Image 1 (cartoon, rainbow, N blue to C red):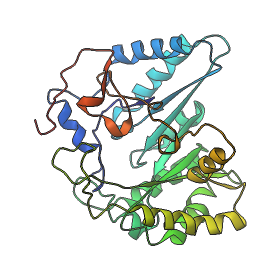
Image 2 (cartoon, rainbow, N blue to C red):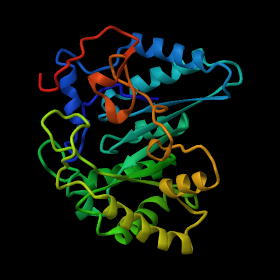
Image 3 (tube, one colour):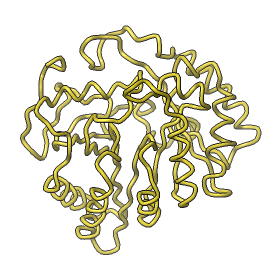
Length: 307
């Protein structure tokens, strides 16, 4: 389950981000998960998995670092309080890395957080769409965050979106992540990377509906060609050192394993998303009124995203 403690609020304004518009679902919200909700969810989430050896809390956004470090200190305290004897509790956090500092990185290392860093390739490819609220580039700030993660020996992986600006440069993107970002993260540690295609709906609702997509999107062929080009290099020199999510999932499916990605599974619905209000949705990509499953708190959810 993906947890969104700040909802859609983010300090960046990435051109292709489908989630920023979700802010309009909560016209009266302060977009902060309350301490009471955090505790109630932690209690129920751990209790529901009381017979499992490990429970994972996955923090996402918007930008979850906008909650401040004290929120995550409180989250870890509650996890320890409600964890069953012998149960391991782990945390993952997806971030744009621009708000990381020494204190937060030291906390993440001490508490074994796994961070996912959003990075779209070298400077000119990353900055094509990943800009701040003033339209300024963000590459240098992201790389400063990566350096802090290395300095404090925080485990991290890379999430790269594939879009119109970088789709035609797969070797350049892959080698940058492998040679300049991932490889030095923890000395000889493996490099983990996800390549996520941008398929951005071109409509006024902000929902996942309609067949028209924006020019920033990639076609199926473009995405396939991107992965093939990377595979040709990966399979010759990087097997066992670089782990590409799509390749791992494809291999697992070929071996008859249950797919961990929704798009490769027979059906979707195993990766729920919980908003800052406690509202539960079918998927991170379907935080929409018609996919609202209920929640831990009664909240006012706007039925019209244009509200």
